[in-house]
Image 1: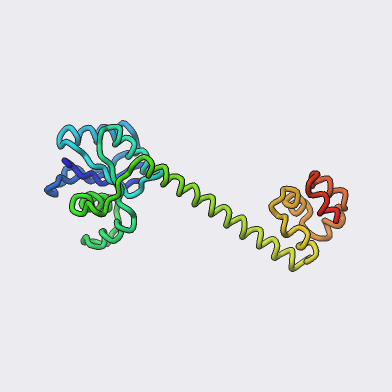
Image 2: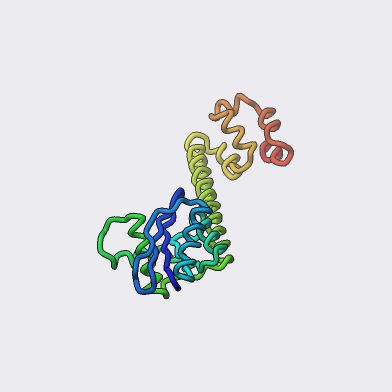
Length: 210
């Protein structure tokens, strides 16, 4: 490698730190998260030093653009996992966490401890993105479960019989609509069976009728 370019990625800008194999600093600047700006830096380093290895600490989301541009510019790419990054950072002097320091740690780790890096094939990026999406899905499912349990707990306190009917079916739009529009046992009783059946659609009418 001609240059090890560590990038501490961010939403609007990244901080880049470049080291030669001998440890000489050849780049230490903030980079806007812009394809032309990133490409200009990669091309300039490649023209002067040869092969450039771009290392990031986050391969998905905010790290996706610099990785894509680096590949297209002919650079090699790698990923330093967060746990390894934190452990290695403890070996360096200073406790202040700054973008410049993190970028320098990433670059030096790639230069001196290449075994800590992970290669980044396209399939790895897809896997990382899917992991993020699955995480969001799991968070939403957990939140829905918490909300459902909270509603069932309140129904049990005020009207156990109503909870037995509606509690297991809180995910149905008709039940949500009834609870939003008629928020108490008295209001539900006053609305009458006709409103219940009208709001439910054909499938849930049997258990609402019961």
